[in-house]
Length: 357
Image (tube, rainbow, N blue to C red; front, top):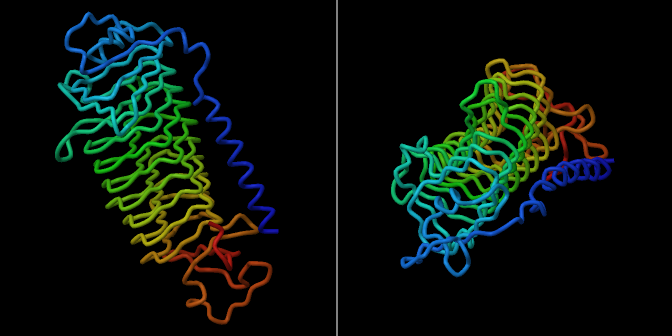
């Protein structure tokens, strides 16, 4: 029975990923032309052709047409970028193509600021050279963008979602296969946002990994979230209905903390060696947690509110279960004694005998 449930859960997750990654592939309409940028081009003329590439990325953006591709050759680019049209900005690999912030005060403190929909940014190292700055790696105030295979480090915010309009909902962005480290906040939302995908990112050695406000119906799937000094994943203030699944959370202070939020589905995460694995507080109700594996956390979970720690058939794996309930027996992979969640009256009624993930 457990195997069948696992297969069904995997199929559902794959369907979600296929829907979102259908937006990752380059649309044929986006191939109307290609401009080139080369930081070593010191002679000119600069017309953006392969023979005469632009020296600066922003010059190529300014002279591009909607849906064109800008291909950036390897090198160091000391500038900020303002993107106000749908383009595909492609580097020569994050180990070869570096964008360092320059004069970002005039660009909303952002190394890259995307105000247009349907943009792609991929294959860059976007970093501040030195101690953590007050600057932003990339600010997104628009929808249906793809941020793929980039490295961000030493910013206040690695990836920052913020809209100037209180009526605008940021939606449909795909943030995948990026590495974000040594920032105050890895990925931070400060605007209404919905139906965005965060898939297979490495979020490590920040102060806060994910921090979401007013984020509804988003997917945080298969990320490695490790060694962040405070939160691995933090949901707060109206961040309801999100799916958090198949993430690996290790060595954070809080693995996942949810505060004043509801109807989030948290399943199949591996939560290892955090100070506190799961922490629910401040009126968080109607969230559901199951198939998670909690291993070697100083405190496995704390919850004084009305959340469900199983789905009615299957709960979570607790590596301290046998120590707490030495007389329990099991049948078909489920222990016969419920696992008590600290700080309240919640129980995992169907604790798993073996880890799901």
